[in-house]
Length: 232
Image 1 (spheres, rainbow, N blue to C red):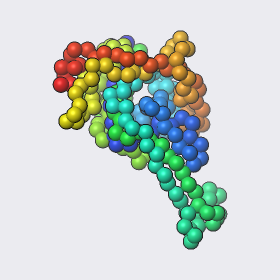
Image 2 (image 1 turned 180 degrees about the vertical axis):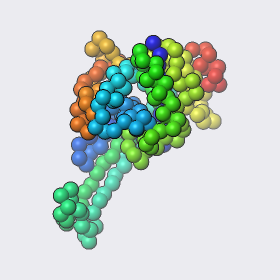
Image 3 (image 1 turned 90 degrees about the vertical axis):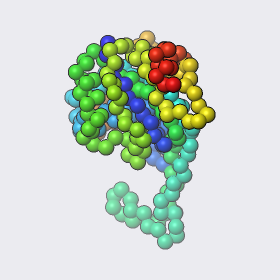
């Protein structure tokens, strides 16, 4: 079964699934809703278009943690000065002391994401769209842009999800003190309902914002010798 591979690398990434109002969370790895949203932006799928989004949501997803990143918190304020006036959603103005927002993100993270499905033509179309996206691509938030291309050369692998993730070379650009790792953490969707519960499975268009449960299991995988040789 073919697998589409994506590189998600950037100075800041945020993959929240439980954010509410002025508290914005992030998971330790890309969420499925976030990755599907990224593909939808590349393909030009409108927020209200569930017909074209549904085949993407049906793909099985896996994530390899090539560089886990460092959790950080961005402290933001709006209208906190005594002279500030905040315009509310209904258009009215208020002087209520301002709004404080905590926005969590991952710094310096690199992930290899795989999406597996039976429709190779769909994966090829998504891969082509990533090279010339309809709308700008972002890593969870609009201001968090990729530092490297999301698409990979020969990014549609003729291999199942786990095999494709294990065979691909380490994609984190090594620093002077780093060497290619022998094993990496990988998170895979669990069809048998075991593992950690994630509420990031799209059930409708992004305009309706309905998300369901999926289960994810984590394990360590050893990179194949070919992958280590290519990374070195």
